[in-house]
Amino acid sequence: MIVVDAVYSLLVVNQAISINRLHRIISYPYTRNHYILMQLRLH
Image (cartoon, rainbow, N blue to C red; front, side, top):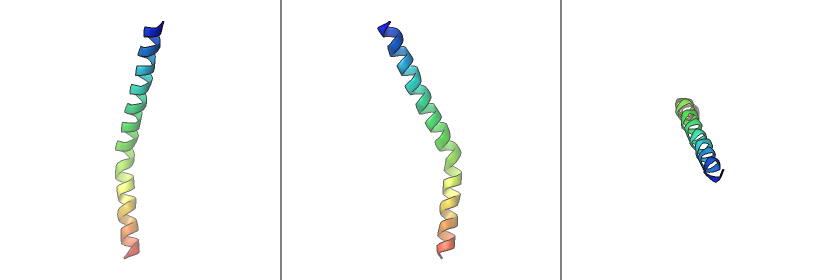
């Protein structure tokens, strides 16, 4: 059962990392555009 727990936790960690990477890829253009808009608004 210890092996099963280890594999399960590894899968959970891997899934969390992939979800985080996906979220970063999705949110990157938005944050960059937001930053550019803020810069334009400041000038």
